[in-house]
Length: 357
Image (cartoon, rainbow, N blue to C red):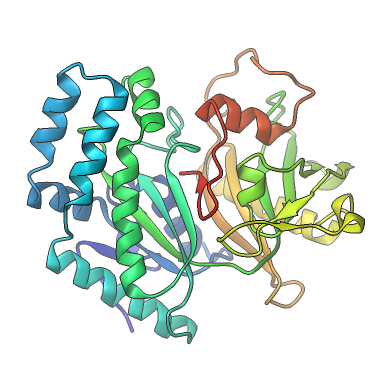
């Protein structure tokens, strides 16, 4: 079943590679899909859908006037939260989301397939700006009604206090931000994490650094665990460092944490073969995109060995990728604790969601 509309685009649609319509995450997933990389299937609710949603509810002018009024962040957040709670999806867009979700269910052969729903703003994840840590991600969203509800939640996340603070600091006009939303089959992760195709602490481009933990990647990106750290030399593709973290909790699904048995907490969650396979994919993606990459991945426990690595998203690495600069963090701290701290100022990990764009 193939669906292609102006408001929803499957990852397999060439038009989904247009970052102005699908944002950094959506375009990245479409690019990886087109390149034959291992990506869980899904679709994007496009920026034009968000644009039409704002216009249908007469929100665009209201937002611009509110931002120009000089009102403080707390006031703006409260006003927009109340305003958006009373808005509805235009019927034509909602129908397209439902049809595209049904197509995804058909594709994977599973009714009401659980999906992750995450923002993909067109102003984020560029080499100059990254809203990572600002917007929300929900996982294990199942059923068309819930998918529609969570797309609307993504829209509302544009106007949370931390996003407003970040945008004001960077001089980004939120009235001009177009929000796409990625809807992607949830991966059943035995382990997951992040990979940088350079050393995010030193900027050394001869290294690939991975941090991973048990279960879904929420605990790693949210800074809730001290993850395992792996370093691979690009020349020779050899593992030159691996340090076991203290992985005391894991997300088996999107609805809360599970305590990890003591004997597993300091056991490495990735095999050498998985680390090297991931690093090889990282080099391939970096070469394809022409700059250092920040990549989220998972090892799917439902898939056979050798075919169990899934790439969840990629984007340009935003600290060292464009301009080298002196680091402003403690090099002894964990990579993810620094990233979540400097981007969002604090880590927020509500029970059924986590802060990650």
